[in-house]
Length: 145
Image (cartoon, rainbow, N blue to C red):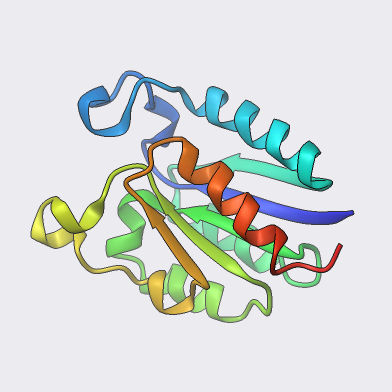
């Protein structure tokens, strides 16, 4: 069974309450439940995590070396700012799918740049919570079960 790490960055713990007109009304717990259901269907084992701290996300990425067959990451604001997270992800030799609930290209200019995109096999943006399950489905074509 393939192991998939799903990482979520800062402020995503407030989904459902924070700007629902942009991010939707589903909570991070709702998204985790959706991912667990999809993972079961795809015979994946998932490790679903969230942190508001850049260093903790980097520690988790480093810990993914030789432990996971794929990664889904919504780095949130760190997408646009973290060279350190980029460098950590660069060490991985697994498929990485970048997810964003909103379409970052239609938002503020500072959100148009991503330090994750150059390392991702695919970017799924603007699909709301469904973007996570789409990412898992896409990963199923890339990882060896």
